[in-house]
Length: 174
Image (cartoon, rainbow, N blue to C red; front, side):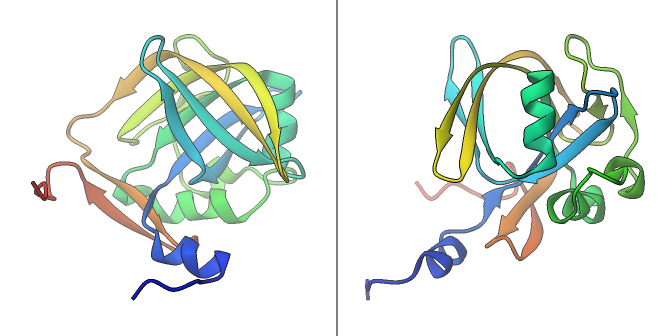
């Protein structure tokens, strides 16, 4: 039966959410990744996405400086490193190295791609807008990379755990 529930419970009940890593760089050129569930596609032509990042986050500082990010969909094998990127700050540590990630240069933007991800979207921020305690970064996708052999990427269960799903494992309801 439908009943009124608190925000925290609604977040859990409405999960899972696609989990991504937004990789950007700081003023010294050091890459940093943040784990996010608050993202979505917002335009088909041109292809665009939006991410929401808390203003107090180190990644917010990097985004404001760099104006670019790579949205990486981590594969199932990358779950430990992906969780680290979503639960620790990169201000004083190298989360990509600690998380066991290998990177390679992107085609267009300064932040690197994460090897082993299912998909990586190179993005250039076009606008940012305040939204409560976060800022929305609306970005155009300027290059796309993917590995069709890596089908299972990560989803967050109420921001407490990660699981992996594949687009071809779940039959449609209709």
